[in-house]
Every structure is written in C-alpha cells, then in structure tokens.
Image (cartoon, rainbow, N blue to C red):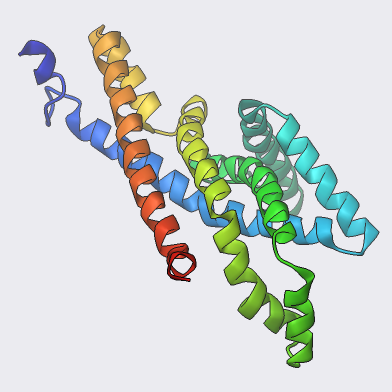
Length: 235
C-alpha cells in the first residue's frame, strides 16, 4: 500500500506529475508527426525531381539524418540552434534567446522521422503506375491537380503501413527529450525514482505507459488501414 501511495495525486504522490508527463509525450509525438510527414513528402518529391540540385540536396539531407544517432541529432538541434539564435539576436537586437526544449525536440525528431518517411513515400510512388499520370494529363488536369486528386490519395494508402511503423518508433523516441529537460514520461519517472528510491516501481510504470500507448496506437492504426483498404476488399 505504501508503494501505491507514491502513485497517488497530491503532495504525497506522483500521480498528477506522471499524468501530465503522458500529455507531454503524446503532445510531442502529435506535433512532430505532421511536420515530419510534410517534410518527408517534400524530400520524396525532391528525390523524384528531374532537377539535379533538388535531388542531391534531398539525398544529402536523408543520408545525414538517417546516419546520425537520434540523440546526437537532438543535441545538435537544441544546442546548435541555441548558439546560432543567440549569435543572430545578439548581433541584430543586442539580446539573447532561449530555445524551447519542446520545439527543439519536435524539430530534431521531425528531421529523423522525415528522413525515413521519405523512403516510405518513394516506395509508394513506385507503386503508382505511369498510366495514372498519363490518364490525368488526358483529362486535362494540371500537375498540381493530378497530385492532389489522383496521386496523393493512392500514395497515402500505399504508404500507410510504413508510416504506421514510423509512428510507433516516433512514440518511443520521444523519450530522448528527457535529456534536454522536457518533462516527459521518462524524465518524471526518473526524478520520482531518485527521490523516492524506488526505481523498479517507477521505471516499470514507465514501461507500462509506453506499452499502453503502443497498444492503443496499433489498434487505431489497424482500423485506419482497414478503412483505407475497404474499397479494395469490396472490389
């Protein structure tokens, strides 16, 4: 009972802090997802582009952020942006700034996510036949209309399994932001473990939280994939 009291709400337990940390973890993952998806899609377009400079730039970006450890990427973005931002603001405005750890975590994880997502999108692009583009051109659709009305709906369906896996990886990688001071699940349970000298209790709880988030995400993604392929089943 004494151990369970450590998880209660109020001044005697850590329940409210842990619950808030779950919100931070989920918020960070949800904020990173659209940023990473959009950047990954743009990178895939760049690699597929006939413009050599775009191809090379996109390939260099994906190679760098697929090759660097995620933790090192986080340090580079957080501390590098801090140094660069302070230099620019000190030069122009004569003042300094502090980079928010949430934003730094979102950008760093978004860079890594987009590098892998671009490969998923590239594979999905290969699954769309050239006849789709030719048919759209025959109907008089512009390149933008072709992409928006014909290609992207099919692309999402083809890329969904790979992107689902990347989401689950992203959810776990949010734990890295604990090293730059963001009050996520790992940081709060770590602080509680040190203060209360009950590491097994709090780290086991952290494991259960991540497993629960993974289970809920997997169930939701499975439903989304089934709905996306509903037309294929009927046909």
